[in-house]
Image (tube, rainbow, N blue to C red; front, side, top):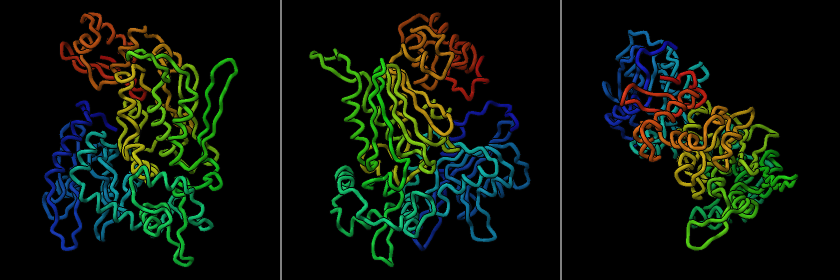
Length: 503
């Protein structure tokens, strides 16, 4: 891609796209269908930009169409960058084209997408088309996605209803397919009761209304000929009495290495809805204990926050790729680290840099699993525990975790102490930091942008020492500086951007 003469600030153009989105003009429709609010921004190679919003010039015109075909139809757009608040559409009635095709026809090779469109005529296919044509697709930061979702709450509700109806007609993905040799008796009564209880539902698990409810979610599918409901792959993983009969890889392999050759293994191959509580109970018994003196009464507590480990395990189970046969999720614990491994690379629209700066956007590989766990209060339907992991230093006085991908596993490593960071971190330069500098580096990682004065104030040190620490991070490639003079700010530099570090 041609380099922009002005340094690209993605957040700046995300905000502009949001403002354009809010200007959208709704169509007048007799069928009650709500149109989405969409804003789009095209950034030229010289840093200038053009904007558009849905219905800006003509009723019903999509924002991307207005921008690319009405405002810029006679301009070359090679190497421009597009920001759009909603995934570009795929199918339009002839002679119209889907907006994702207009993007690739214009030879735009970088696109920032706000949120995935839940409408079944899009539902990831717009992103898939662009990526298939070599376009680099990135998602908006989560804070901006929440604004888009709030502005489009009515549209997204209707789109989800259309998606649910499409699911009932049968999907083709592994987890969406009905298993024709299974019926409702393959489900665990304990798992179904757990789901009903935690999701605060009023159904009887043996009743037809509950079965229809599960069908609407995509966990079962009605076999009209047999007059019975057949579990889908997702249903078997979530509620099946023995998920591994169908999915051999459906197990969490856990172990604690206490040292001196003492290892405690444990397999969790129950229905997914039961696993989080079982893992939590096992961790309470298996994690080494330390003394908590923060209150008047001394008490034994695990020296690593169990809710954090639980959340990491849930993410690994819900977001893993279940099509990789033989690859199993794992939880590995020793005296220096906790490692949670999940089969499958991050989705193309989520980079390791976004994960390691705790800004991963909302996009799910397994939306049915995510939805069920969200209903049960086990996780946010969107996100990957980013808020929890980002505040490790502030909330628990522990270093933040690191993501790494070694095919086929995405690994999340939690150092169990500040002293262990240099030995277990994939950031080799971290081992060169002093204990004091290490605490400072963790604080910089947890904050988006910091100044010398903020650093000095937080650690109660003088400005010279604060600047010395920050310049040390820059020297090692762990941070980069923005601006010059008194207005200089510092930001953590993930591995993928190391070449950009420096003044």
